[in-house]
Each structure stands twice: as C-alpha cells, then as structure tokens.
Amino acid sequence: MLIQLLGAHAAQAPRLRALLGPRHEILPLERLSAEGPIRADVLVTNRLTEQEAGRLDARLLQVPGAGMDGIALEALPRECAACNVFEHEIPIAEYTLFTVLEHVLELGALPPRLDARSWAAIHPNRPFHGEAHGRTMTLVGFGHIGKEIAVRARALGMRITAVTRRGQADAAADRSLPVARLREALPDTDVLVLCCPLDESTRGLIGAAELAAMKPSALLVNVARAEVVEEEALYEALRDRRIARAALDVWYRYPKPGEAECPPSRFPFHELPNLRATPHISGWTEGLMERRYAFMAENIQRLAEGRPLENVVRPAR
Image 1 (tube, rainbow, N blue to C red):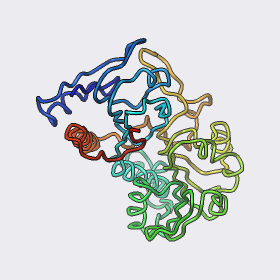
Image 2: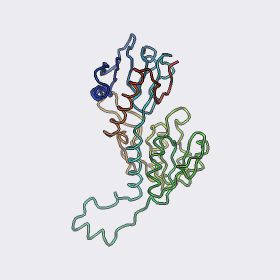
Image 3: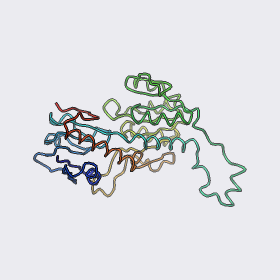
Image 4: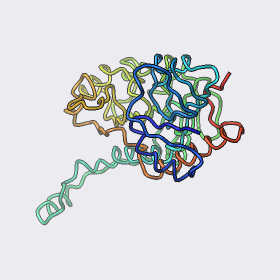
C-alpha cells in the first residue's frame, strides 16, 4: 500500500516505516499537488481543505491527532474512511495538573534565588500559599482527556464537575451537567478546564458573561482549541483581573510555513503577568508519538487485511 505523510508529519515516516516493515511504501510529502488527483491508499494529515478533499483518491484518511476541525469531512469521497487517534491524554493531564499546582502554590511570588540575603528576609515573613485539596475543578468535555485529568485531580482531593453535551452522570465526577447549564457551575468553580472538541456548538462557548460568572480567584486552563473562548473577552478578563489567572496552550493564530513573525492573538496576551502561555506543547512528548504511531500502524494494517478500522470518525460509504 502507498501511505503518504503530509507536512509536519512527514518527519515521522521512518517511525511508521519501522512499525510497518517493507511491505508498504511510505512517502513523506512537504505539500500536496495544487491540482489533479491525490492518489494514495492512506493519507496521514490533520489539514485537508474542501478542494483537496474533493481531489482525494484514497481508502483511508488517518488524522494523526484527535481534532477533526482541520478536515473538510463532508467533501471526502464516499469510499474514503476517516479515522483519528488519541493517546495525548496522559501528558495533557499532567500539564493541566502542573498549571493547577503552579496557581495554588504561588511559587512565582517567592525569591528566584535563595541566597543568604533572601533567606534571611523571606523566612520570618514567608507567605501562606494555597492548596488544591478541597477546590472544585469543572471540566468542559469529559472524554479521554477530561477523565485522565479528573483521575489526577481527585488524587489531590479536588471535587470534579463534568460538563458534557447531555450531562449524563459519570462515576468519575462528583457532579455532571449538560453544557446548557454550564453557567450554573461557574460561581463554584476554582479551576475551569476546557478540553472539549471545537465545533459550532462550542465555538465561543466561554464569553464575557461566562467569565463574569467565575470567581475572581479562578484559574482557566485551555487545552482544547483557542476559539472555545472568545478572544477579546478573555484578554479583558485577565487584564482587568476579573479572573485570577489563565494557562493557555492553544492559540488564535498559528504560523504558516516560512512565516517569520506570527502573533498568537490579536491582543497582547504576552504582556499579562497572570498568564501562563505555552506553544501548544501540553501533549507533545516522545511517549505520545510512540503510542500514536503504534495505533496508526495497527489501523493501516487493519485496512490492508480487510479488518474493521478503529476510531472511525466517518466511515466509508
């Protein structure tokens, strides 16, 4: 079978080749052709425009991540299945708990060096810091990522509110609410974690009214997509200290190949002292890559052998 890895994923061709062996041709591609059919048995990419999808002649579109918002699913040919892959929930859960502990321990308020002078000054006047224990974490989205975060938060003694589309009760949460009742949870929320997919129902889900309903001491963590939160409303809430802090690992603009400068937002978030800004690295570990490509190699092998595919987002028709 011919398997093509596109763009940033082209660098993983040797990894996939080692997993699948010499029976398949694995071709890294910097970019797709501008016109004509795009022929492969499997295309690995997380970006496919409507025009490109319409030219695709493939049996499987394997997205090397969970998010499908960069794929024009409805434009895919009928005979092409689309699958995604998770495996990022472990490092994202660890990142989220780091941001919680960073927030409550307030280590940034302490001297950067504990030398003779700072030790003598800080010890008799050392400030109290907070505890995660007993605080309430509200998770918007309670799938693979949300549940991994909840396990670790519960180990710290935190209470868990799960917000999902239907609000079905879940044993991993102390309270479950449908997304339509999200605002009910916000006044009691100490940590609001966004880990839901981006679609038209979640775009702008957190706006000025939701941010105003939160505690002034609250932390917002976004490991979903930036657009789940209204950009200007979030900037203003942080600037004016209407919420205490945010940790953002996802952004409103991403650099294109060859782009020398690219602001991550229309607003100067980088100037805010109450923001932990990271460059979309919460899930970016070697362990993630090992697990993801092992899963994708197995899915490709399933296709080759005519077995059912896993993580099918859109089946072949």
